[in-house]
Image (cartoon, rainbow, N blue to C red; front, side, top):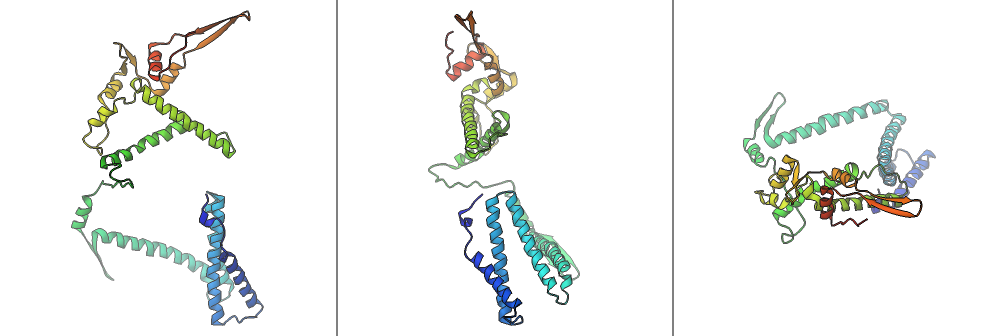
Length: 328
């Protein structure tokens, strides 16, 4: 968590607190009068600037620490500054200063509850209601035209893209937005379902980056395998037909008739007059994992290689992947 703007602390953040400390020292040693208006104005300016400098120092440290410690440090710094100002006023010994802490809390509560919340209610209510507030009554009536006008757009949202119309049309923009679901499925696959990116048993940044890169490459391979093996999986392998059946890209997506047939019968046509059970990607990998190749050695001299016979499902999967089993 870093920002070039906060890479270094500006000079004023160092100079202002030093000047403020020098002014306080001059007042303590009675070198400058304490009741002079110019001195008081200068002290007020230095106080405000010193508070901003302290907050800026805390913000720079918070950015360097990162979350969550940065936010905690920033909150503690602001709280200490506020408490310091209250204590300073109380130690001044002026009449009524002992009630400053209580009055400060009460003022904050009243501003939040009465001021902010009340203003939000008035502004929010003024959008759809005519309000009449007097010292003894409160009346309101509905703005039927404004409510009806806004109801026309209930459930609508706008998609905006920076690409020119020549690069992507309206329907393409909607499809691109809806394709974000594929990104969410990819993250789910990488994190939990198939690849299990976490927990990461590495500590140094190069090893962590290498681990994430390998998981991304593994998902890249899995994505291409899913596209190729789609006729054997529950995945919709006839998306073009499903897309052609949609009246609009905004309409709810539907699966093709071929995918619906696979899901209802739990069988898939193998193309040779036979049908095979439909697999998920994981169960198909488990099925392919039963293919074995054993090397047997007799007396340390003669070696024999025995390869298991592939089932019809395994043969079709390897055929779709373009893989041929080498002869034993």
